[in-house]
Length: 126
Length: 184
Image (tube, rainbow over all chains, first blue to last red; front, side, top):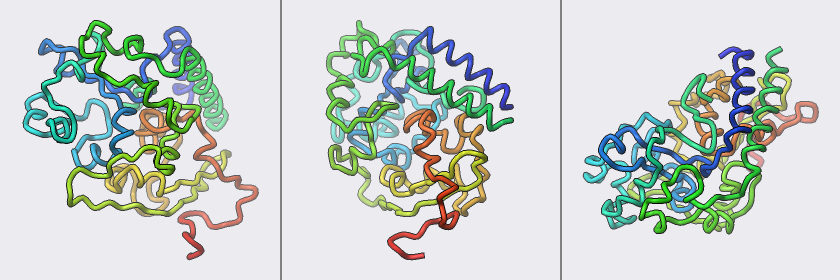
């Protein structure tokens, strides 16, 4: 991205953020690649809640979550098989997957992405 | 030229975050624009205010100093869930001098490895050899290198001085890896 283009994007961002305040808690993640297509609310993943209880490395090293929204193609089958979220959400480390509404808690129509901050998903998407 | 533009960008980012954060400190989940207030499960979730208001304060991001919360033992997040995982904390500061007309950057490995595993950054984001990566601020602002976390989950890029913390006019030490505990 050229410096001038970045300036333009930053200006645009100011206008957008003045008009539409960001409400979400910093670093909340919306996961909606598969959820709504399968009749469930989008998933809201709160980084703040998990960070109080686990260091980043537990999910991003041991569990194998890539540190980029959209780069982990998680589906419910894998979670039920004990992968990704299912490493902890199994009724042992954390509450089990029977509590659908606790994760599938987002407003309909939300797009996958990280909120309360930049999208941080690559050039031009800041 | 690009230095001036970068400063303007930083100022604009600061202004935009300031205007966005003015409304409330931590909103209830039902009013955060993400959670569905009609979801029956919403009442079972912890509210951000209940958890975050008890932690050391900060002025950006979640308005919590996560590093301070960890070091003071206010929070005790688990380091691993698998018994054989090796936990490594590295106490090694690096000083970068190729910062244009900005102050030098001091990078503390300790604060990072208290949270992250070495493999989260090496060799994926950064080469282990000092100076071999060629990090540029515009790339960081675009979500690469440091910007993969800072600006997304770690403190945002409005906080220039937290990284650009070393005054080149008064710094007399060596660039690169810094001595730990008096050793070279």
